[in-house]
Amino acid sequence: MKTFSTDHPLASLLDPAGSPWSAVAATVVALDGTPLAMQPTAAVRNSWRDRPIGAVRSVEVRALQSADALAFHLRWADDAANRDHGDNTVFPDAAAIALPLHADAPLITMGAPGAPLTAWFWRADSGNQGFEVRAEGPGSTRITGRTVQANALWSDGVWQLVLARSLAGEGTADSIALASGQASRFGVAVWEGAHGERGGLKAFSGDWRELLLA
Amino acid sequence: MPGIKRQMAMVMDLNKCIGCQTCTVACKTLWTASEGMEHMFFNTVNTMPGEGTPRGWEAMGGGFPGGEAQLGKLPAIGEFGDAWKYNHEEVFYGGKGQDVHLGVQGEAPTWGPNWDEDQGGGEFPNSFFFYLPRLCNHCTHPACKEACPRGAIEKREADGVVVVNEDRCRGYRHCMEACPYKKIYFNHVSQVSQKCIFCFPRLEQGVAPACARQCPGRVRFVGYRDDQDAPIWKLVDKWKVALPLHPEFGTEPNVFYVPPSAPARFDADGRMDESKPRIPDEYLVSLFGERVLEALQTLAGERAKAARGERSELMDLLIAYRWQDMFGGFDRDPQTIKWVEA
Ligand code: SF4
Ligand code: SF4
Picture 1: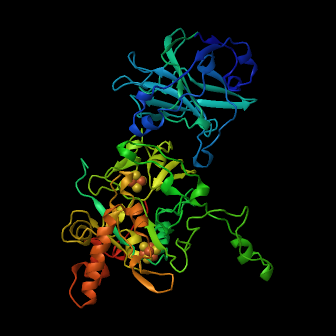
Picture 2 (picture 1 turned 90 degrees about the vertical axis):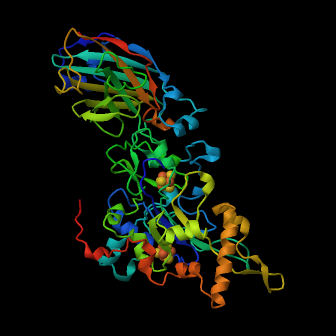
Picture 3 (picture 1 turned 90 degrees about the horizontal axis):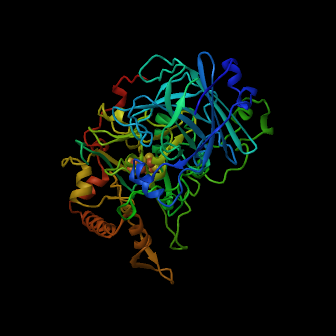
């Protein structure tokens, strides 16, 4: 996927229904459930054996790049918006864009020891607060930054979400530094809260895809 | 359990529990009075037979049925019994005199943490009930800890107390699904799972947990599981009269119960039939396993001994003449400590 450059300020990119996005061609990314064997605990593996993981099967991804920021736009079908922890029994919908922090970081296991990845993460109960997280394997995810901006909109059975951050990032090893002309890779994950998806139970893009910055 | 130096444990004598909920309130006041914790009771006391809290918890699954880890049901707040809202403000400060009365506001509740109090089971004149106080069992094989993909639950090395690391917890609630005793609550304000901590800040100062120290019934013994000079080991290992609840769940609890001895039944003519206990054996077996029958026999034998005026170590232990002796050395008076809020 190529990002497109835009003269629009970041503020206008943050509107998921905003006009800058309508001109951008979508990359349709097919999603699969995370493999059962990758679930880190026996209780989860045993209890999800006969239950499909990964309710959302595809997502449209777009990316726009302003002078100093990168914004991803995700669009996927979801009959009902789950915005909170629904009285214990359901979970908020969530989505993330993963980016490698190391050339050998495997996406399928959320990185590996010594080969971390980062993700720009949004959860429906966190408002416009997006999170930068870092992981080096299943269950190791931790929040490393809060400069990712998120804005989500649900209507007529469709979620639209913008995740944006400055290109330069926070200047730490946990925060990926991006620049014009750079070639990187990305992955996508979507959690369907009504289906009990959280943590390692999610739909994801399988392997890294190319990300070419304008 | 590997990595655990010693294990704290509790024994509760169900023959002495009067269902007063002092334990529940002691715990509530100390640990779950903050925002988001309104519906939480780390300690509960329910009437058995009964559905308890969360409603029907015994059938919600989780634990290790047949040795395999399983996730059970996620109980909703209403199944625990939400904190009911009252019109205190209006009644006490509203200036309306006798025109208003205290009552639950909003939708009428359909369950509570002690909804089926004193209902019990059996048919008159052989109806029966007893109280069952419950808290987290600080299991040797903690289903909650083993289910958490983030390693957010820790079993403390020094005392085996099972605690949630709220900095690691991301609110996935696999612990809540996995605990077959349904002793984990979810805080919707801080968005983390919360549970009984066996009052470990008190333990660290030599003070018994609040539920035990405040119990007016002298029901609760506390101490290290392996302390051969203290009541826990004597009741569990020497006399074998204290048993875990639902051992078939497979988590190896460290909370044990002295089962309730029942009076005899009435026969069809209204005469006492000493051959059968009022609480059916099958029911107690369903709660505490087959070994409960042996424990009841031991208790009956020792009680008869004491009734004959003979000395019984077991009866002396259970009577707990000196209540401080119930705490296996954790008998320091909390008033002698200057506590600071973190
Ligand atoms: S009772 Fe439940 S919450 Fe407590 S240690 Fe055992 S499995 Fe965990
Ligand atoms: S305080 Fe003691 S007697 Fe009262 S309900 Fe609790 S365990 Fe039973």
